[in-house]
Image (cartoon, rainbow, N blue to C red; front, side, top):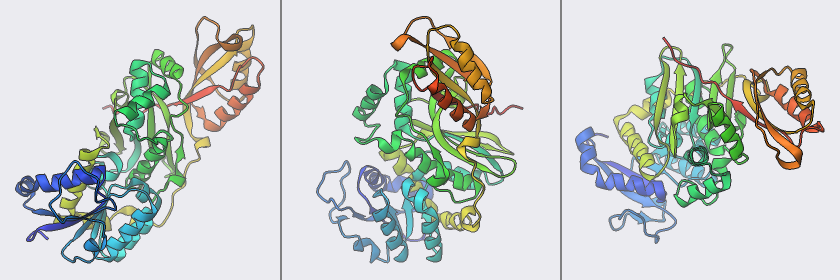
Length: 439
């Protein structure tokens, strides 16, 4: 491959596809100087051949005919950037069947059909590279595959969705309510017109499925992940948390216990303001990886967008050309491991909790809610009640708990909702204590 130009076919000429084309066309000489390889964009396929893009292609390069790539034996690599599931899966299968290595940034496709596509690629003696799928320009896939294999990964803590992080940052720093913060994110291009998959946690879960598969050595899908988004977050709870020294983030968490059981979850999390992840603001992503030998490693950067993701895609091209991707792909542990680990049910996860009660301002209310919590083995760590009367003669009471299981909290919340001194169902958010890496 190194003796001749590396010819590349690109399927999908949207935002990221335009960024890939720009790098391949504008950085040809620079990439050659750095790597000794000449990358050549041979064909770009998209159903829309008329819309103006932010990069100008040479005449004849853009087509709506996928056969231009499939039937050209000089094109060694196909890049799928169409997004979605059904058609993207078909593109992968066609490219692999035509003898092309495949590069993708499609996290949803890999999260749902990774095992099937990886197995098919291996039968074709080709590889699928996917550095851009999880965290834009952050080289986290490479780190897990080549930088940390001497480690038994014990846990992952990630801020993997820039849309949610931008929204929560603005709510925290500017006091905006959720609808206003979401609207601003859309105006600045950090949120889609339909942001559902971002704010409901699905996008983070897709990425966690891929990262956890590499970290723990099993093939996971979103069915293995407990998912909760930020669409019900209220500014009052962010403000209350700040008063207690916490910051609210949407975290993707993967943990392996001593017996090998795996916990995978995405949910709003209160983390202490001194935690490094708490200081990651705006649209940025970060992933904290704990290994038994290396301790805590942290990866930070732009987790989405045209050029960061394009950077990761071009990195995959180079790795394929060098022969590294094929070797790494063939040795991926989830391809060799047909077993499936025990997945911990979210109800059995132990955590601390923040609870906001709208309690009626009457004598004895403290004793009543404390009794309910105690009956469900929930110990109160702290409580705050500010002066002032709210709706229906209620006042907000903020309770934090010592560690307890989720099922205890669920049962207590159900019972608290039935008390005549509680105005509405209590709000509950997990407090996540990320371990410190100390000598």
